[in-house]
Image (cartoon, rainbow, N blue to C red; front, side):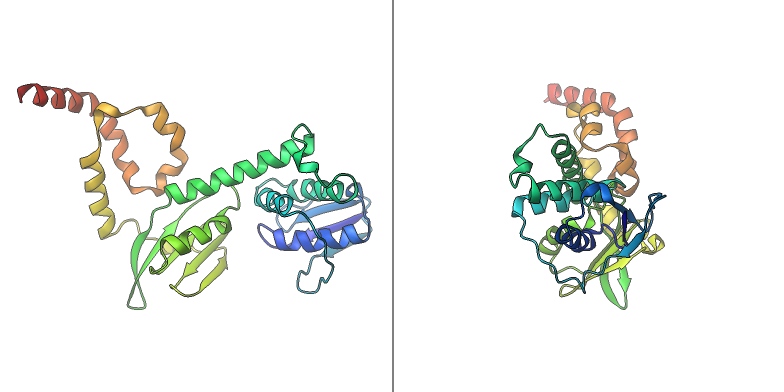
Length: 264
């Protein structure tokens, strides 16, 4: 039995190099235990443990791009079984059926697509619900945001934030990693300190005023809103501090709008 430890998060590069080596050695999935630095699988019969080193691995394996991308998304899932599942799928693609991911009724493929879908949705939520706050960093304007994704989805959205806020200095902090952009270079930092994020800023106060003014009580649909913006995201979004009061006042505000309209 071979044990492979992935030391990075989410661990795609390490997993890929370890998987390439195991495929080259024709080690079947049931003979490998994959573990991370945070979640260790018990291996009562293990006779070897290897820490992947992507810099030293020279093995190459040609995998269809759609398969590789699907594996990459799935490996950003927070499941402790992601490494084993992805290797099992890779093994089957190489030795059984190179078109395996097209078999939508296969149990492994169903699970793989479900994990990838969850990660993609999580990444979308980051672009929708992340809020920057302004700080002064070394005499320059800098924007920081704290966000708690369900999965390891920060890296998936970095191209979006680099493109959308190309000329803005920003930092995005998550519980497992931070990304810092200075308009030229992107730097990643593990285990960042969330205390550097301010409680509010001057821009946020303008945003709250704007949000309160555009709120339309006649169009509020609480269930639909919670479906699209679950409460677990609210604590890091400034405008959500207004929602409860606005909902409570929505009936009165709607009646006033109707009354004002009739008077005109």
